[in-house]
Image 1 (cartoon, rainbow, N blue to C red):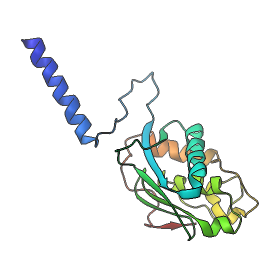
Image 2 (image 1 turned 180 degrees about the vertical axis):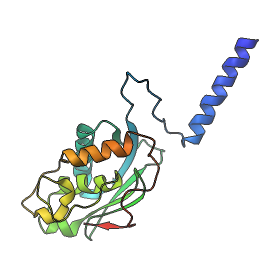
Image 3 (image 1 turned 90 degrees about the vertical axis):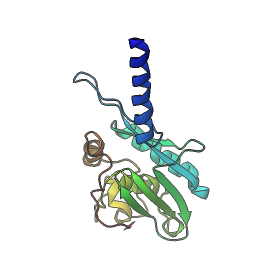
Length: 186
């Protein structure tokens, strides 16, 4: 009887935890010897039109570049942390809290010759808490359009990687993004 009550109590705690995280799995606590599990953020690129491949590649670049966060396509019926949409304006991000918000892949920059994968990775960088670094060299992903149309580098530099690791490596997840403006237009 005592075992049954303990098991039922554990099940209730697990269900309550799942309900508090919105049905999404949260990273498990880690021991001092084990690395922390990556915080999983989902993205919905269903509205990204012709830029879907670039968005998926931009997310994959972040996954290759950092350990503390992982970007995954949203599962059917699940609510995404990040919405990605295509429109005719300039690319921009509207972060709400760290790891959450909306990205617009604007055709205006694409029509001017900017690389779609770089745009995608850059805008996702805003959702991950990074500000613009303008003007800046092509080696800085967050230099955005100031690096010019010839720049196709979609990879964050070591400082940008480190900042994202810091943003998601601790208990800061869910706080307001480091960028204070509600709309980040690149």
